[in-house]
Image (cartoon, rainbow, N blue to C red):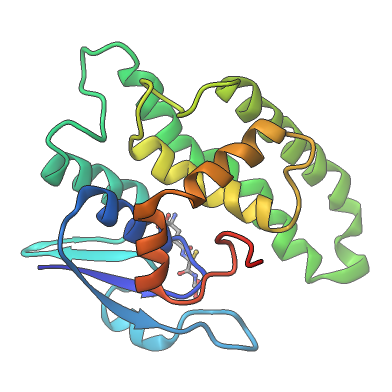
Length: 211
Ligand SMILES: N[C@@H](CCC(=O)N[C@@H](CS)C(=O)NCC(=O)O)C(=O)O
């Protein structure tokens, strides 16, 4: 059975969501962030040298990068449903968004998170980071437009990957300028598979707002 090494409040939540969409059986091994440092516990390093989550294991396969895990799961268990094959229209759009989430969109969010810990010392960097956030989120919002999904008119691995940076931003009220992105996250949060994943994964600070 597939094992997911799942850290609370982390990117592994989207892997649980994807497994629920796929309807595949899986086991969760839970790890809890240190309350002070927010880092993963050392026990995750016993699973993979990076000590980060998600890590998935499926038989002999072990993957510690969520985009690769998403591609692997879509390829192995998706029957073509959650991916767009080479040669099909929108294949490269699918590939682009699948990579863009970690390759581009997360970077300014992480820079903001880390520099915020520097207090005043980080302030000189703030305008550049803010303008990069605006640049990327505006591009993302314009590309999504009024479409329901990022590629091919159906839920794909690209949406699985894009969900995390968008919901991280939404949780901070940061999508007010991009209402179509806020609506996109709300739609994802209403999906039965998403809600099942939340139930299995435990508390998740970036999930749907509790009433
Ligand atoms: N690009 C990697 C990032 C993995 C990553 O940084 N995971 C974070 C959780 S969102 C983590 O494990 N942080 C804990 C730590 O660094 O100690 C992926 O998408 O899988």
